[in-house]
Amino acid sequence: MLKKQWKDYFLTGRMQSLRPMLVYIEIFILPVYIRLVILGKDNFSWKGAIGETVMVIAFLLVALSEMTHPIRPGKMYYLCPRSREERLREIRDAYHFRCGMHLIVMSVMCGTLYLMKGVNVYSAGYIFLNGILASFLSQVSNPNKSMLLNLFLTPAIIMGSFFQFALPTEKLQKEDIIFLICCAVFFLIAILPAFRAMKKCIDREIEAAAVCEEVQDHA
Image 1 (cartoon, helix red, strand yellow):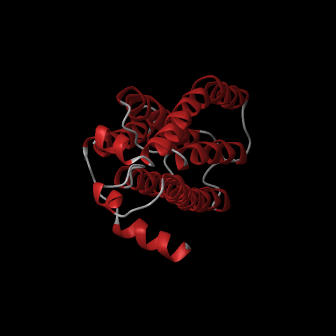
Image 2 (cartoon, rainbow, N blue to C red; image 1 turned 60 degrees about the vertical axis):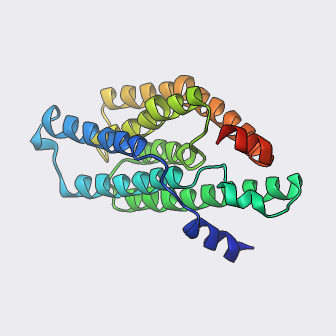
């Protein structure tokens, strides 16, 4: 079963639109620009640069996987006779398989940042929480939820994670602690509710994708 999921993952991916991916790339550039220009070149370090590069690669890999593997399979999938329950199980298993792969990428990224001391332990924990949420996201057909994902949730996760590199890696000052508290509050009152709304939409889309007629109506 695992071998089949690996094969399906690498053979069934398709890029439907490059526009969201280009938006994500622009989001990566903004915090780096702010860090170098506004915070000043004196804060530059190779350790921080390597850490930021590791984070860019991890988030871009997850975003690319998200773009190329939508929840709804292609029309050819529905030509094979299957019951709704079989389709639902296969679509849900494929979604969970992708989420597991994303979690592995994010775990490796956070582990690398922590071991190389690219960020402090609190920032590493905050980045990991954002990585967990990013791992379970997926593009959906609902235009309102898609806008929520592409214009708020993903940018908030990425930029909030990037700004952790502005904090010292060892002794934190009072203003650093206040910044971390503000990040935690923003995560609880803005990012987490938006993620819950997206997750409910993803679950509904998985249910709808198991029915051939509903998929054709939304194609």
